[in-house]
Figure (spheres, rainbow, N blue to C red):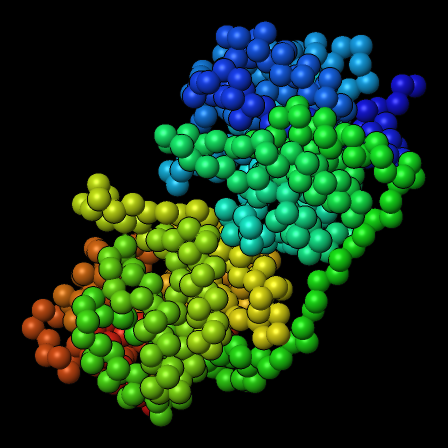
Length: 591
């Protein structure tokens, strides 16, 4: 029986290093002085594609990638019929260039870029279709490259994993973080847990010096073969064009050869590299000792965990109390600070601060929380949503919060920007709440290991498909969430749905309670706030002519009823008082 390519490559890599080719896109632009995507040349200028593949093979490349990095619906904007032909032609041209030579061809699958309006499931389906097309052409080696995480390609990797040798390469910045906000350590850790993957490592993003440092800091386990394909260096932008200079070929080759000595099994080049870079690297690799150098594992320093600063720490038998204080829409925070000081002696376990709910600007939740904590000494918990910042900004904000002793967070996806201002204000949504929790978990293992922060999520028990909401809670718990605050419950049905969430997940749940203070207030919440259910039964509790005292009394009765209904399963209560009327809390909690 013929040995599979997967087995053959694995066997070969136990004996020797393998040399990838270099960049296709930047080299193509250099040769042909064009801004057109090089993948279009698969069908329009096949002779150019063959020329580049052959140049890399002549330079010593033992593994070449198809010219299909951007052959996807988002980048090429082609109908699927034309896109499949582009993929097939890209594979056939690489096979033609390698014919008669001891050169392996890898189907190259690049990151599919997409915006916040694109369905993630649709992108995963696109990866599957791309990989099916390559498999139909006989591809037996795949390179998934320049990835920021694994979410979108997971199904595609499962599809090809038993049929082909699978290489996964992540792109990180100089500080070791991907565009999805995940650290190099976390990315490799996750990839090493997937059995279908044969080799893991990095490409693009950084030059050889930074990549060497990043690889040396990652605690590889040795379960997978390692790859290292840095850029030639860092480009200059001249006349709005990205230009790499070729004066550092010897430096590039020596650094990549160092990475091979450190344990990288497959090496090569990414943006800015040319056949000259690969030729120089091949010469250095051939001068090394014939025996395979030992794998080098650089274990990460693990600080000893310190005190638990979770707002619920040491309160196992207590019904927890969280109170939300909405940051001001302007610069006057007197009402909020008065409310915070009033709550100092109320037995409240944590004060929470929403992050511009409904997509309307309010004072920053973290800065507001820091001020309240500093002036009152109370435990605080800002909400942090995924709408307004990319992963870099999120990490920066979280680091600043940590330095200011903010230890608890509520992580939410966030409400969309109101439609009236979408023409001038754009949402970001690089990820949802589960993705942000993954970043927080990563930071807890890295920057915050000495004293990890605590974070939780939200529960929308009013969601029509409660099974889906339960699955989301389980995903959040798997991502490190240790508590949940629910949307306000105001009916027995809502409480019963929360009870089911508790029964099926075992989550620590603080039941949300919003004591409406008037009919007008209840109607506004019913019609203007998403995710909060206000039934006719609730509205019937209020009259249009109620005094302030009567309205608040009705709200107190509603709150006490919900507390009684949920007492058998709720771990505590999360109060959102309209207009920060926190004086109602004493009446609600009183005997």
